[in-house]
Image (cartoon, rainbow, N blue to C red; front, side, top):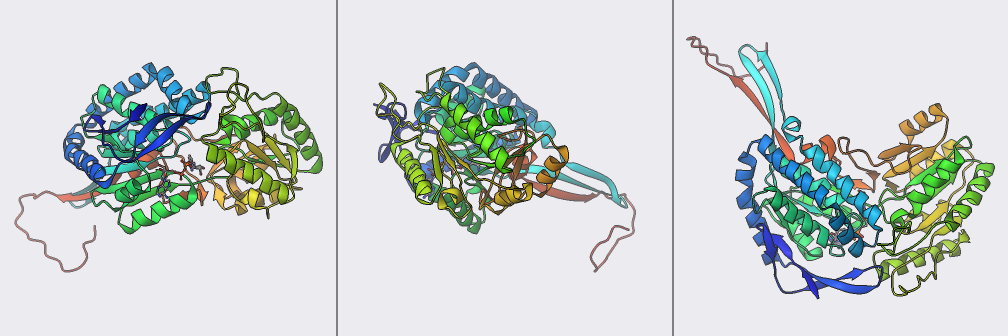
Length: 498
Ligand code: NAD
């Protein structure tokens, strides 16, 4: 059986000890074992990163940028292989896996502009003969802890800006689909990255805690579920680290009576069921405004669901594949039952689905629930599966209130032809990322990604300028050069620029 090892100092770093099974979600079979690090191994990785970082930071930004350009080309050249490897461990269909890699590649392209992005500010003549300037300097060693659902995109969100800024980086990917992150690290070395600047350490809570407590790690970026994000944020921050921790989501799609309903239904089907609903920017709640909108929408969603095809990850015709694990499948099924017990109407039941020839795979057909109310636990919590809940509202204000009052505030979308309503919606809803007739409003790489409330802990978002700010600290320099005069200034009051 294949063993997935750590990657330290530019090479595979086997470290026998505890392991975890990596499954093939389409078949339910174990396909590999990933080694789980202990603290000795983690310390080795951090020491390697710390030793490599000063020379990397000293390399001028344009040369660092050339390595990012090489990396970009290598990802593109290996796109098919990366997507197939990703799909085999995650379960998403290969075309969707390519989107996962591509969204990460976008951030690598952004990081290629690092010489421009790192430019500081300069004020000539801030006082008599005095100039002030600021520069952005790397932090040292940073770390990233990533979830299973985007095993290419999210590691790239973090490592591309962190490394381009001149940091060394420790990546702790999800132990459930760890192969693509290792492959990306290999490609970075092939691109010319000095050994040790990027190390990949596999593991579970023990390694995460080790990262959060290690004094040589200066910043930690985390993406995963909210309870763990909050824990990671608190522990890292109390150890004096810079932290950004993205959590779970329950995104609402509001459908106004004037929406292009057929387009909205197509968008909602893709956003609710694509990737088996395992996206933090999925749309698992739809809020039709008005009874008539609700009836029309419900009818069209039922028709649309009938056309969806669930298949193995290599099935080109499939709309989505299996969920990540048997436990997660059972958890989703429990939420469906909970929704029924709480009084939701089960319009389409996706449980009990079996794919011929793949009876052991973790498949679920689409589920549609109607008459959902805010008091229901199945609405309040993240299900993270192919389950769409209809929550009816009578007014736009009521619909906005649902999204605003929810514990999560990652993404939200409105479907309408009314520009004024959309504008007011975008201004008032308490959610971090808003789509106007865009179902999955993931900002492009030169903006930043981040949710509000329990979807994000910390001040700075992922990638874009926030990513550059997160992985650098600014130094502010005030300078005065002697003019050769003989008068000595002496003052005991706070200096002012007169
Ligand atoms: P998860 O929280 O289980 O795991 C995330 C990471 O934390 C993994 O690397 C895991 O090894 C580690 N971890 C797990 N348990 C831990 C513990 N007790 N202590 C310390 N570390 C621990 O998340 P997941 O199931 O891999 O991913 C799905 C979740 O991620 C969903 O909630 C989804 O909404 C969220 N997510 C959020 C975003 C976002 O940007 N807001 C993006 C993608 C996914």
